[in-house]
Every structure is written in C-alpha cells, then in structure tokens.
Length: 277
Image (cartoon, rainbow, N blue to C red):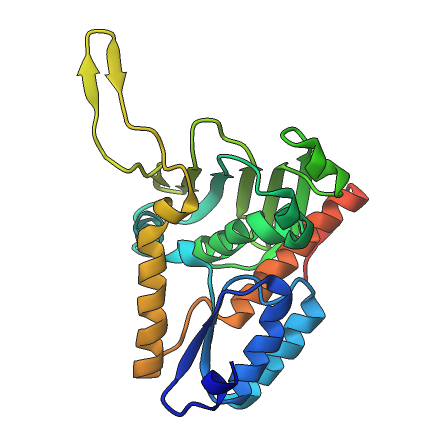
C-alpha cells in the first residue's frame, strides 16, 4: 500500500476492503493526490463520513461511491424516460429488491444492518430517479427468514416509505429471501403514464409447450445480474478522471443514502415517521 501511495504512475485507486477501513483509506489516498473509487458505504457513522468528505474536498481529488445500480442499462433507461417527460411528473415509485438468500451471519455482524447494507442501494436509486430529497422516512421490519439475524438485532424483511417535500412517494420492499431468484424491479408512476423495469434474466426467451409457457429463471446473484453495471460504473470513473468532468455518484450521494438508512433504523426503533432535514 505504501508503494501505491507514493507511486507517481498511479492516478487513482479502487477500494473494496471491509467497510470499517474505507474512510481511513479514502483519506490516505486523497492526501496522496489520487482519485478514489470506494465501495459503499464510506462509513457506517455519519460524522465520520462528513469528516472524510471534508478531507477529500480539501485535496481536490475525485471520490466516487459504488452505487452501481445507477449504471444498470434497464434502470438508466427508466431514468432517461423520466427526464424525457414521457410519463409526466413523478408521483409514486415502487422499488423491489430481494436477495435469493441471507448473507453469512459473520457478514451480518459487520454489515451495519439491513438498511445500511442492503436498502442503502435502494435509497440511492430513489434519489437518482426522483431527483428530489426526501423529508420523511417511515419503516417497518420483521425477522421472517433467519432467526439468527434477529438475535443480532437486525431484520431480514423490510418496507420503507419515503416522501419528498412536494409529496412524491417511494415504497421500497426488501427481503433476504426470494426462493425464485434475485428479484430486482422498479416501477415509476407519473401524471401521464408509467415506466417499469422488470427482472433481468440470463436469457430472454420464452418456451411454448402444450402445458404452457415457461421462461428461464432469474439471476441467482448480484454478480451476474449487475455485471454490466459494474463495467459501466468503472468506465464512468475513468472517464471522469481523464476529462475532469463531475463524478456521480459522489461522496455526498453516499452520505445522503446513509442519512436515509439511519432514519429508517430510527423509525423502526421509535415506531414513528422520522423527519429528515
């Protein structure tokens, strides 16, 4: 790591280490004048994230946070449809995100909980699509899949409702178990219509037989479902460094998603809707 830090031939670094090392590494390489791509989140503590972003800003380097779903071709097409005005003004958004199976318990212990680990992707997607900040968060959650997760004080099934100042609503549905595969869907309802992104499959075929129509199963893991998005986000990172253009999602986007995640956790703990400033 010392060699990377001191090398004049290295302009940028990619951080894919455990979460509790992210902020320290970002600061270290930012001070060395290197742009940084870091997997989400920057940290699990908002104050630590803010301190880290202050360091990054003072160095003038670029920081990109790995919310790869912004670069999924299907979700990007939904965003383009919204921006083109084809469905009018956004009124309601429904985001469904369900994993095939829970992660290992050792991972859950360090994850920060379902809202900071899993739903945080959906919080970022909600901000990306709606284009407004949310002022209230209401969440409900249960342990329906793995009681070991519950023993750690976490949840495996959750629903979150986000509302903007103008009244736009986003409903997020999360589960750590989808027996039928990796379930990733979005629907945006607007004043003039709706646009949706259905589940992506390894093969887009239908098989017609006497007993009915069948389709291939869903992807079994995020590594294949979002393969293209990982390529596209890295291309964006490199291009932004080479051209000097703005980078997205930024460290500020990472902080905004964490604020929503913390608000959802607080909503559960206090059994109320939480106002976000």
